[in-house]
Image (cartoon, rainbow, N blue to C red):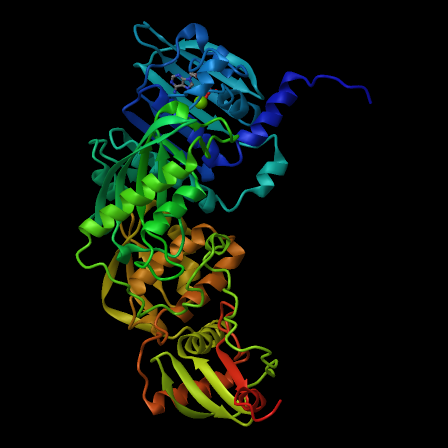
Length: 573
Ligand code: ADP
Ligand code: MG
């Protein structure tokens, strides 16, 4: 084959593959354009997970009639002029890639009017080509409608998750920008139903309340710190860190409530997440992550925003300084504003790794932790448990028992989780969940992202005994709950579960629900048990199909054999 330069259409499709991964990427690019245009109101509407329609309306500067077509050319941008401008970018966009990329994989309709124009412009692009152009009246601003996303890229369409999952991602993007720009009034409707609306009053706490609700908002603490540094090769650097961080009790099982904005750009950053979590060290249980909204302001030339196709990662020229600035500012907020900082580990099921390493920190919180190497050369246990005689409880967490061939130590929480897991599964198999009716139906308020998932898993939840029905805006009525969690904080559990489900394939949902019910309401570590309770727990554990591990794969029981004891005491060689 001879070497040739590709045609424009192919070039645009290739670029689109990087920029437009899913409907939420389109929303992100168009919202960024609206923000760059200085809009104070941004309306987002999606239908069918964003595949059928994404419509973004702004009241920004608009595009002059003579430039509308040009805006859809590759590398056409009004935001930078020379390569030198790349050194200090002040806008969210700068590559002139988004519009042509979107038009390469969807049909796009624009109505826009710039300041002082008597009439606006209407433009329709199908298959990346302009098929209609006309004048159309409009007040200053821009409306972009994107239809039939990926219709011509069936391979990409196949990679998408369920429509509700895609809607959830869109909801997350809009929520993040609502947190980054409290002075902008955002609204999001999904399939005609309002999902999110922010006031645009300009105050971060108001935006947090609009996105996460009052309960979370009332437990947030302001952060404000400036770190000044000077190095011989880089010179002086001022890093300002503002935002709000949540009380430890708000902690979540995932990192979905950690938001970072660098010069008002939403970014993902492991370094920054690690800096915040460092600041919380000693305040959170293992596997728990804080709620935080962190704004970092530094000179534009101290950060390279041109390193990622979706512009969602940045590179700091002095990463260590930024890390320290964030860690210090957050720690300061926590120590000064928290009434009594204390280590609350009474409910921690596992504290296997006191000194976590950074690579472990990044494993998903649901990855099974390696079994603690408490005993060397532990002989493999057989499938079923031998008959055990309970001797007692240590640390209010472990049951010590004697078996035919040595000493057994049982983790009471892990064991109970295993027992409950089997119970839930059995009830599910016979389709008879044991339910507890609530005297009064309880109302449950959820975040926009949780709402998108909730709507699609109502039926699944009812299979397990949660009778939940929609009840107004982001509010649900709960009539029954599974008997197994009735005595526990089932509302908190449901919300956590929705967060977990939003990142999961539908095929994993059932498994997640079972694990969640099994865990909540299980006997905790730190809970003192009577001899009778311990014996009952051990008997029930013996009955389970897989008594040796908890549903997360961690051990429920470890053994010190008679031979090991004898060796340990020097009775044998
Ligand atoms: P970039 O944002 O990197 O410049 P885009 O492809 O996203 O590239 O947009 C191309 C150009 O179209 C922008 O530079 C801007 O001039 C114009 N534009 C796009 N969206 C809007 C909008 N909502 N309001 C005003 N101008 C816009
Ligand atoms: Mg752009």
